[in-house]
Amino acid sequence: MELISPTEIAKEKVEAVQDYSVLAGRSIANLFRVPRYFADMVQQADLIGFGSLPIVILTGLSIGAELALNSANTLQRFGSLSLIGQLVSVGMVRELGPIITGLMVAGRNSSGMASELGSMIVTEQIDAMRALGTDPIKKLVTPRVVSTVFMLFFLTIISDLLGLFGGALISTFLYGMDWRQYWSTAWQILVFQDVFMGLVKPVLFGFIISTVGCYYGMTARGGTQGVGRATTQAVVASSVLILVTDLVVTKLLMTVFAYH
Image (cartoon, one colour):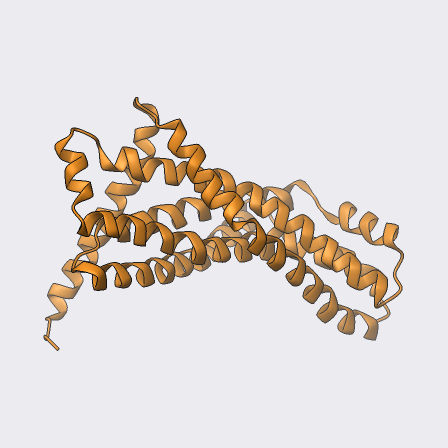
């Protein structure tokens, strides 16, 4: 294994952050330039959104059911089982819905983008596009960014609803809670701040998933091994960034909205 000095490692990391920032910035700037490749956006929306629907439905239902199942034990000790709808509602909408959906979509699509673009890099298809005068970032990256942000927003809403439904099933059939009471308390506890927090996150997560996946794909080197490496790095990096961003955004919005 080749030894690399700490200075060189630091330079590589700084350069990587710089390259990623340029790619992310250009992917947004390209929205205001023609052509806009709407057909590619629709195709990517189908692959990313509808392709991720089964896993989002499954995780949303199971997370909501598990949240209700685990919290019911604690609430029963204090005679507050009627609060289970409120707990599931706030937990899913503010935190679990966005972050679980983001991680699922990252695992499925960030790796797919990295492998697809990485394969195009090593087979020199990207170079051919440049030779023909086509901007690869505009043609390949921007449609993926737009589609991921757009579809993750709606996937998160679906996940939230199914999480609440999973919690309702557990509350009703295992703990004998009234179905209408559950939905009434779950709905009434939500305020604008909760919904806003839960819907801002998927927009940011979608941008992270798509830009990180495309960055690692566009910078893949070293043949098929490099593509495999880029795929793994894309999933790890996007998942870590989602977790860090979630923490920062939650703290920031709690400060702005003066949560106690």
